[in-house]
Image (cartoon, rainbow, N blue to C red; front, top):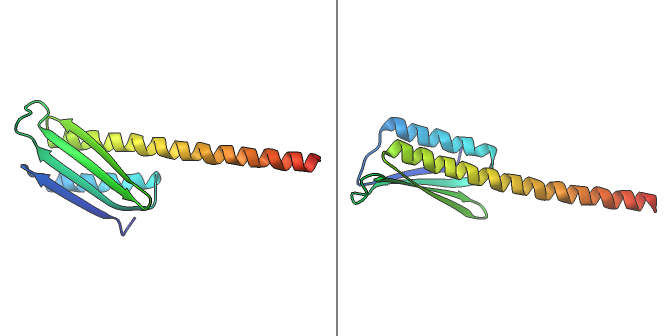
Length: 120
């Protein structure tokens, strides 16, 4: 995780150093889902056309085998960032559970094959 790059970009707005630190610390929490994250990117932009949900936050998480992408909209930058991170967390958790189920099933099949081989 030490060599993971975090790129933060803003368009038509600026963010505080505190929010930048929050973004970096939240990416570190994703390490419990996947340890081979290469690069992460955050794009925060303010849309002048949309008054209610004027801030858009896009998260890109690059792994060795694929990229994950999430978008969230909110009335301020912090809520948009929080929404995007929640969406990415749910997605990563779902992927991890799916992977664990796959391995659990393959382990059960293997143990069944071993039992039938022992019985024969």
